Image (cartoon, rainbow, N blue to C red; front, side):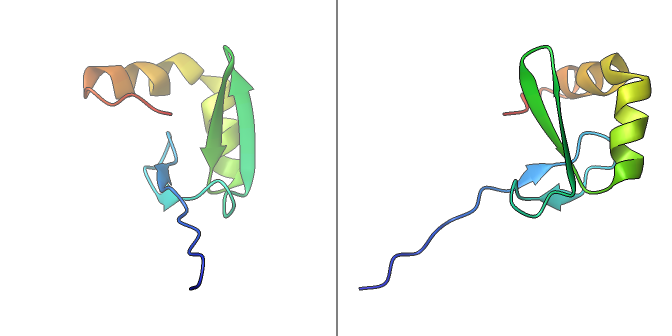
Length: 65
């Protein structure tokens, strides 16, 4: 029997692209929460205004993990 490793899909908080932690190009910890990004551009955008993207998730009822 083969073991199947299931990677959880997460969304880049800036562009919404679906990625896994393993495939993420960048990661950044903000307020004790690690966020994952598809590119350096999305990371930089997030770092410039993290509250904008965190509040966006809360407004849509999304609780990033």
